[in-house]
Amino acid sequence: MPFSPDPSRRSLISLVLGAASAPALVACGRLGKPTPCFSLGVASGCPRPDSLVLWTRLSPEARPGPSEPVRWELAEDEAFRRIVRRGTVTAEADWGHSVHLQPLGLSPSRWYWYRFFAMGQVSATGRTRTAPAPGSLEPVTFAIGSCQRWDHGHYAAWRHLADESPDLVLFLGDYIYEYPSPPGAVRRHEGLVGTHTLTQYRARYAQYKSDPDLQRIHASAPWLVTWDDHEVQNDYAADHSPVLNRRFLRRRLQAYRAWWEHMPLPPSTRPVGSDLQVFDRFDWGALARFHVLDTRQYRDPQACALPGLGGGNTVDGADCPALAEAHRSLLGTAQEQWLADGLGQGSARWDFIAQQALMAPFTWRADVARHWTDGWSGYPAARQRLLDTLAAKRVANPVVLGGDAHANYVCDLHQRADDPGTPVIASEFCGTSISSRGRSQARLDEALPWNPHVRYGRTDERGYVAFRLQAERLEARLRVVSDAADPSATIRTAARFEVAAGRPGAVRA
Ligand SMILES: [Fe+2]
Image (cartoon, rainbow, N blue to C red; front, top):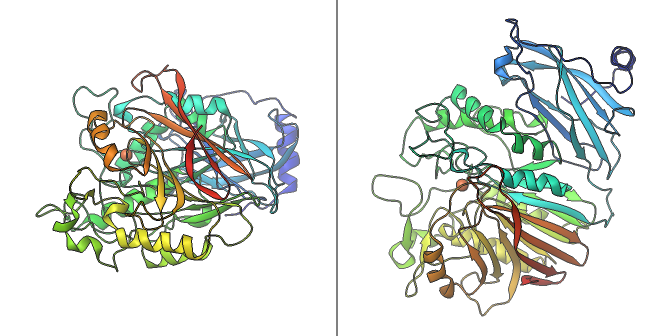
């Protein structure tokens, strides 16, 4: 529901609240116990030149009613002296008491502050911004993060990113993990059976969103979000569960709904039935276009799964002819076409393909091509179609952003993906996990010489990749925490790379 101004309400609220003073905090629990209403924090996302999305969810512990009014304010200053939009929306129990707002008619390239009021309480103040006006070439700072498994570590990485005050955060999947926690976890998932129902998924998001460092990064910049598999179930493919459960679509529906409830997405994207369109594109002036993809909802099932199962597998190319079938798609036909149409179109100097997985081929054996089938290497024909599109449309500066691998990979993408003799056509930054553990670095070190297009590979780093983009250059810093198990971990830059406009391929700086 887009914002509709209500001037009479505006003056009334100003009178009640005063110009900038925060209202007195009172308990909002209905049982007389002081319970914070906004203990899940606030968030923003989907920045456009004239709009953005604001999000919060009333805490279940506060026992909000079936339809709880939530007032909100958007201001040009942190003290809320210059309020530019305000209104009231209803947080409905049917949608987990989540609030999704999309104020329109805002100014381009401007920072804003926002807050919510409900049940006598006020939320934390969030900071967000709009995208620049079309044609603008002002630089942008942004970061990619993914894979924040709660029971594998803390979110010090998010705190350090918030300290950097980026213009934009891209989240590339695995916001929650669906499992129960094994013994010896750094911190435990609540519940003993994992997430299967809407109630369980909602509770899992509420637990993740209780983390103060995650709340801090959400409150400091707008996000663009997509999902991977763990928001539903490990290695699922469209309506196929990895254990071939015939009732999977019912589980997926509940998981999709809970994901939407907890992400800063426009009200208009509220899921209908079992589908939810996640893919979208966002322009940052004339500098960048971000194509945010969904590699889960429309994909063909993974080829050559283990007997009696679905999901990913590590296979030799020669043993799995299905791998190369031309019709197999990771994005689905409609999204592939949508992406092809939007690449290199318009005025953007740089095209960022923001998605879940490692796009570059990666083989774990010296003698044969041995690939993991859940990522792009499991869909080589679809990957080649995308690379062919980049070449045919002469897309000037394509950069692929990814996650999922729990490792930092910086790669050259060649025009023929498996032929390093063909020109480099795009640069790839597959960022490591925020907290989820990676595989053995020794095993990766063994395999790196067989993958010369991989310029950097570290499985033992947790953190994010911070970018600064100008018209002529992209700079990347691989930011790594000292210990993901330590909530007060320090951060360092493990490596720096640069991509010069017109010269695909990242160079160590
Ligand atoms: Fe992950």
